[in-house]
Length: 122
Image (spheres, rainbow, N blue to C red):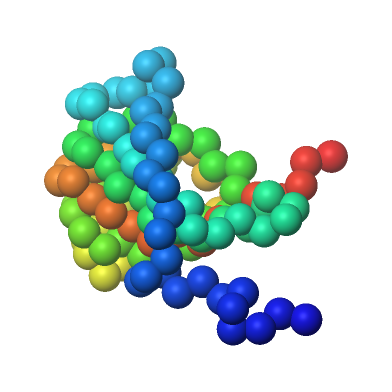
C-alpha cells in the first residue's frame, strides 16, 4: 500500500540534472543544449515526469512517445513535416502524439514540465 511518503512534490523534490544534446545530424540551427530533471519513472520505464530546459536552436524530432507539456518559460515554434507551424509561449499546455515528425525550434531559452508515456515495443 502506498502512503503520502510515496508522493513526489515536484516543487521540493530534488532531481539530478542530466545534460543532453541532439545528435549532430539532427541539429538544423544553433546549439540546442538541453537539461532534463527527471523526477519520476515508473517501474516499467514507460511513464516519466520532470522538467526539461533548452537553449536556442532547431533540431529534427520524431516522437515514439506520447508527451503532455506545459511550457513554463521561453518561446518555441514547432514545425511539422507538412510545413505547418505552431508558436508556443509560457503557459501553453499541449500534447505531442507518438508518431509526430517535425522540428522543434527554441527561440529563447525555454523550460517545460513534461509527462511522457512510452508504449511498449513489440
